[in-house]
Length: 168
Image (cartoon, rainbow, N blue to C red):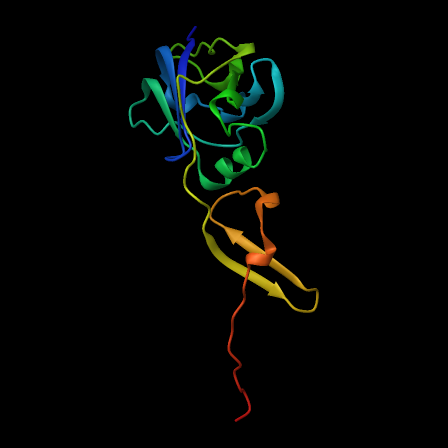
């Protein structure tokens, strides 16, 4: 059966690369079998909810998974999980992927695997749009990625507008 020998997590490019010791079937990936933990024995955890190997060949030792926006945001929204190399530990369940003979990957249970390479997210969130409801005095900010709500400085927000006369 295949063994996961290493992985890299790049939060700048949103790529997770899994490296096995033998070819794995690229169509066998079940991302819910990949669970990140905040320490090598557990702590906070989050299982991936989707993803696929991007390689165009049916078999590879390196499975590159693009962490799409909603998947990445769900993963990084958990404060204290995958925000540093020391809070990034991967558990692999046997159903996560299989080799060409359809043998399941060897499970990685506690202690979990640390990344071979970890690249932190250095890109600041961007305000994409906002909704304002004057009847409930609610302002909702829509950002390009998850952000720490406690870092918001409401006193720094300014809303400017113009008056439009609809009855000339």
